[in-house]
Image (cartoon, rainbow, N blue to C red; front, side):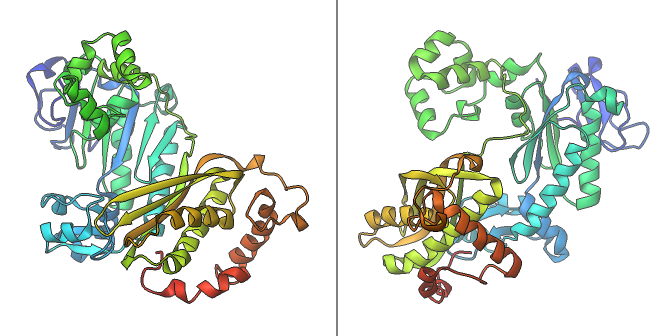
Length: 448
């Protein structure tokens, strides 16, 4: 069974040890490194034979804010928007009060009234993320980002090139990130992605945990099924109705029966429960959807006040799609009512597009179906069913390739507008139909 990495256990007599602070190999039974005196020692029998890692930056947004504002280092910090927003991230001090991401801000401040709320600065976070990613790529080309602050790494075959095993390279990476960016990361090392992801959560923050082949099934057996990748609340309830609450119970059922009961997801759960995961670390992850949303400064029910915000969000989504080089065949509208009920509505587009007008018009139709007098505190829009923009072609019969409905032929016009905005600023040119919304979009409730 995995133990806390820096604590010698009864089974460590046969283990291999690594000092996380100097990279040397101390005696596995030593309480401190003989070379540097550090007590941060990771021990495991399979330490130097495992090559799949998951790295997670600790409380990433909050850690960067504390780094840049020393006066915040000893106080609970919540990253988000005051009062009506939700928690984007929080530091470990705030978590001790029960604050967590996606929690409504008013509840977070009720739980932790002394917390300092800091507005998110995505440009700053993205810059730090790029630096961390660059450090990862110097060690292996097989880096699969999961989000802005976490990624998988596959070190298979790299030890010959670097003359160091993956465990040692990971410890060195953690030290470099901390020294250069003044933030910390937690590391999970195993033989597949599923277990590496679990391991990275075992010793947070500033952690380093290992799960090897020998103990994987025993480690998983008594854990709740909610730990398995793909088990959300609905599936967890369904499994519980069938008497399955622990991972070991799934491992004891035949694969055929799991597939018969739960379909394709049943086969995946059966494999995970046995510590098996054949998914490779894929540096090029398929983008499934792109979206943008905002919590409104006040509850709004009037479609005329919601439309300018929806148009702004549509423009942001279109920009991100163009940057990613994708077009979408579907649009999803997201609304949250004043009583926190979440609504999502989707619509299939006639043509795949990355046109802000097409996204807006589809979203507006969906909004009309929901704007029945209810007040909304959040609105968002996204594009899904994405494919490469290389498939976009100029529509036949469109005047100068421009399609007022926002179809395929709208791309050339949007391309020219994008070039102008990039050179002279985002408000340097607007469509005539947008001009009436410019002032209204500056009212409370604007998209951030």
